[in-house]
View 1 (cartoon, one colour):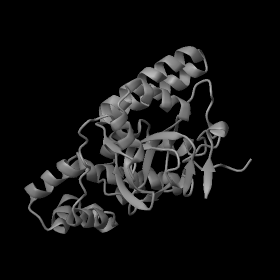
View 2 (tube, one colour):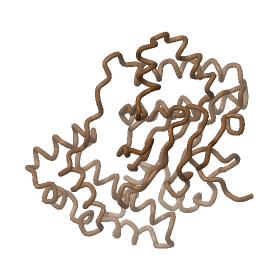
View 3 (cartoon, rainbow, N blue to C red):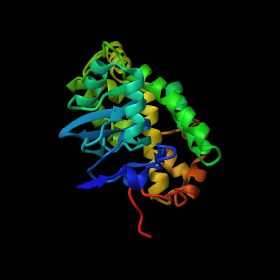
Length: 294
């Protein structure tokens, strides 16, 4: 099993090393490390296998990984995901915990069998990524300022999402909904859309809509749209099909609507994503992302 160390991956002067993982094809196999790590799912979903158990993670899930947690990422059906990863040096987290001084909460956060998961809104996900992108930029210009922004941001992050004196236990998705989500990965069901989802759920439309809000924090329409866009992204990266063919293959009847939704979600046009697929920066091999041969 791989074990990553902070000495090899994190600059001691700016004790984080943020990076984005564009697809599950880029992730490392099962691994552990001697440092802390945050990661947030930006798009799609995945199965996070950690300490022998599985967490189903959707867009917006922010996970706090502790040193010595053993984890890996697996596909959730046919769906891919994109996530933003922030490895943190042990000393940085020790300082933050000491500053907060809430020993009971810290112990619960650090000693629980599974890492804690917080659910962020799309706006909060954007704020999380923007914070660490700013720190990454500052680290190349003014490391002292980068450290100050980092420490302030980390304290805010911990207090907002993890230092909750009365944490809410994450609810498990009911089996009927998990079954429906799994079956919706199939092309024929994805093309049928909402009628297929409601039929597979075996529940009333209102019941299904409420369950999506409760367990996935989104509407069925939003979920299906993300599922289609994720499938389209995979085809753009792994095939030479034309964009029109991909749009139709993934259940978009209106190609201009597909272009609009794709750019809104991925912040680039479909062909731009395809052109950039060989240009993903890998200046250092980071935990969570595979190392390419020199």
